[in-house]
Length: 188
Image (cartoon, rainbow, N blue to C red; front, side):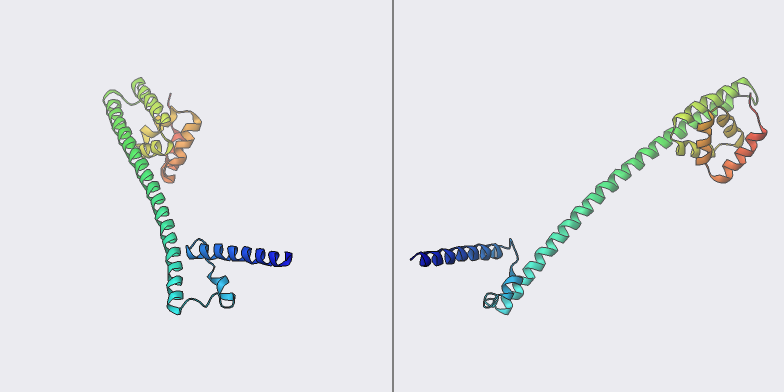
């Protein structure tokens, strides 16, 4: 009698486990079709058209997941692109403001300074303070648009490290020409 009970318990447990596995496969939680195909009589209960439909559903689910992942990736890249465009716009605004300030200061410098005078030296010092506070690349770009005398005057009023950074950020031919002229020119 004990053996009959044990056999019935084992059969019940196997039936329960089989039912759970079938339910998981039926609701597409787990794909057990490769396993069922290897079990005799288990994988043959589907007709060829049903098997094809099942395979197409599985492939469709995989494609949906792939599309969803690619959509998420596209959205992330779009957000990054939007942030980059905003930063670029902010930089352009700042550059325009610096250019306006530079033009204004150049006009003031041109209207009030006489070459070699204290006023011109003071204007160079004022400009040097502005350039020292700017981003190195932007400052070098703006300096490159000035004439050589003004560039040398402004760089001469800066500390050596800042002047070196600005020279490095300038186009090489301009930086070489300015460095060569700075060796020949000494401002008080």
